[in-house]
Amino acid sequence: MMSSEKKFSWKEIVLGILGVGGAVGIGVGIHCHYQNRKLMKIFGKAVNEVSELTTVDVSNAIIDEAVKQAAGREVGKAVQRATRTMEGEIAETARKKVAGAVQENYKKISQTVTDRIAKEAASINMERISEDVVEKATQLISDKFDSKLDDLTEAYSKQIKSVGKVYESFAEKLSGEKGKTISLNL
Image: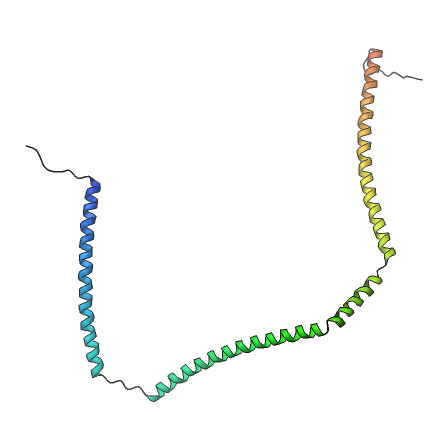
């Protein structure tokens, strides 16, 4: 006999369980939706009946106070808008007036500034500036020369030491003894 049972993998089992769970969830959701609609109809009827049977008496003082507060808020908003508008207009007017005044007085302002700059330029002591420049240039050149001279002195000192070693080596060869002094006279 052959068994007609099919073996399912764990993935197929999980997917089957999720499918069944999803279907049950959808069914529960639909059921809850219809129950909520029924309840809303019942509550709506109850609210309508209570509102028809109930009369509300609000005193004129409460209504007047609410109107005052609402009016106060609207007046505050209107004042703020008007203030912003006026500030903008005043700033624009001031900007135009300043630009106009500068334009009208440009030649006078320009001539005054030009005269002042010319006067300041004329008062510059060229001799003192020349002396300062010469002094500064002299110092820079002197520093550069000192640096170059130091480099040359160091190089010359190394060469003298090398020549001294050569003469010392000659002296050793000629005398055959190390450390013996030989004088050469010309």
